[in-house]
Image 1: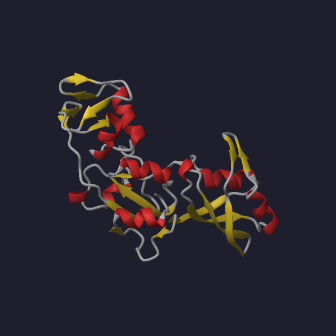
Image 2: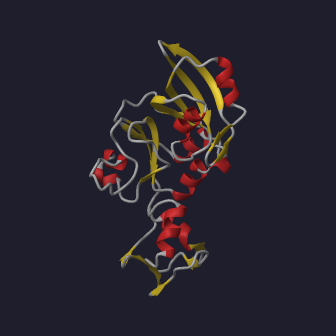
Length: 238
């Protein structure tokens, strides 16, 4: 008989990230063996009968997909405007429990990882694990090498200092600059905000990679299923 924290069990049932599952618990939507558990930290027997909103949930086999997101697709479920959700791009038979790891803005393209593995999602998305994301940003003006290198010292936002920025390369494209950078921060609109903070503006943004994962061989709007071991090795997660 094994015991497991309730939020982790819910995550393994494909109900979202740890944080999302914690919200289900604190909202009083989860019962175990007929008793509502609304406090975090509860440990349950893995053989317990767990209901969410009155429906029994069970642990799902983990699945992992990488998708090359086009513009116009959102990463938030149940959009009031009815826009297409990124998980809807995966075939229907694979969708139960799937969610995107982190978010890309509606106008941002590129790599998005989709899974039902909440533990792995947290280890990729949370800054404390240091998994870098690589972006290509087309920004306003001809930024100089000095201006870009100064960003590596940190950029102050209204939510605090952003550290760990690495400028990989840049080139001038007429009156704009195409900048390739790597960053492990995951704050809201972080890439757009750091350029705005140094006096520029992002016109186009593409996420090229997560760790060493990329979608170079995946067409825009297409996906492929990959294994957990590949993700762990490419993202250098132990």
